Length: 322
Image (cartoon, rainbow, N blue to C red; front, top):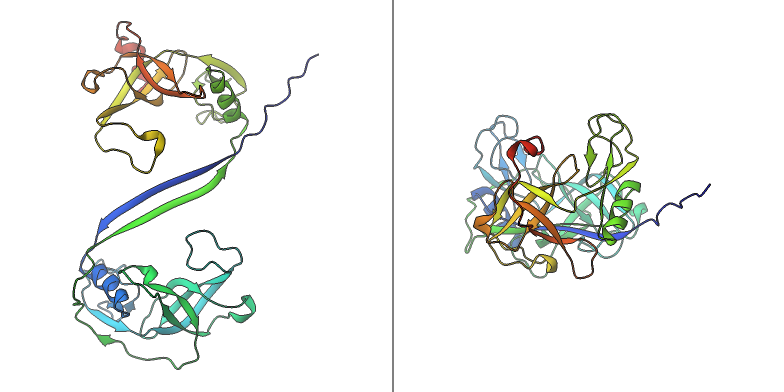
């Protein structure tokens, strides 16, 4: 009996990044502008509680909040966790503590980094103060970190009108997830097949649906999918959208807009996968269009799908795959 060895385990770095741009309301604008000016603002609720960081609506009553107050730049650690191996873009490059700090005059705690020589130097209840960044632009990073500081608490916050010269009105939050992806058995077989210009799914032994890409188990029946099934290469456009915003910071998506991204039901598959449609004007793409893959230069995956020239598929043949 011949035993087929399992495919080589695959590993690859993967980065998911999305720079999110948002405008600021009056409370958040005042808070971030205040940080630029080395001033920490909170907001007072109807019950007299001071929230730092401030929010624009009371989390308990949903009432609009506008009563700004200035709190201290010193505070008390309420809880903490040691970070022995800082990651890129974290506040400090050397080991530090993540801390929740209740600033003097505030009733809630602010999350930030504490510069300390080791975990033995950190404790709940210790007094700390803000270390301001040398260059400030109106962001939470204007607080470089906290540092130990022996002082007495300041009891009452002072009223503040929230007015500053040249207020910050918007921010860009660069959300990023950087990790190493290791596909499971089903995904590994799928990727190895793509390298051979084949598309392979797996069939559920219970409902007989063929999943492409395979998931290793049927999400409907909850049983393992072990039978491999080669599908396509041709397929049918089931639904699509026209993309009018150009992708940025992504070399392999440097595509002129507008273009079409579609769900494509490959022949023999039990659900549709997504892919870009090329070789046809964007306004001529339609449901039922028959397409085939055009492989990338290195031949490892379909770069896009183009029309085959066949007559459009009848709606009844793909309506269950919408």
